[in-house]
Picture 1 (cartoon, one colour):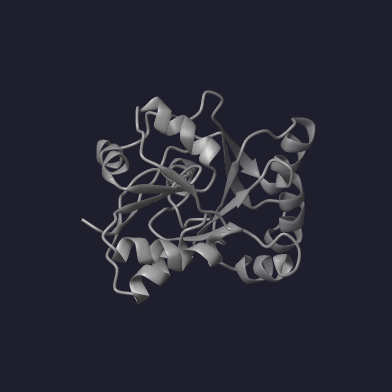
Picture 2 (cartoon, one colour):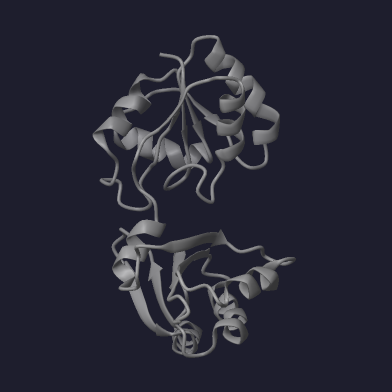
Length: 224
């Protein structure tokens, strides 16, 4: 059946893919991948030979109409990212929006994402939360932190190992040194780690210990 499938892929452990996701990836006419080299390893691991095509932030504006036209012509297409659910801090939104606007059916499978495990195991309230993903790297960064400083819901941020200390240092004047954080690293992988403490303590920890892996920063909301 011609449609666009949004298929989550493992964020680390290759076993964290659903049977349904594997069925879809085997049955579609085309798989769109953020990085075909990364996705080829996953597909090879599961014996999937479906054709791959690059779809990333640098070419998605030029390719969405072409992809939508292929689906309209009767093809089934699956969109995956390097890890997790497409559209969540990864390419996907533009293609989904284009398909919706053109009346093409879109089906998103449930599956792996880094923010939910990090939130749940943080120990902070998870009935209500704010997901910010990656903050702007330069312009607008302080403005976002200013907007979040009085947020009472749990806050979730993504950050790279190269900027994690800088992020924590930038958070200090807005959230205060004593605001509690839980910082998840290498989720689902062999060296998974959850660091719990204050922002000040986290700065000291990651300054003395070289940050490695992708980070999810969970910040306790401001107490009333």
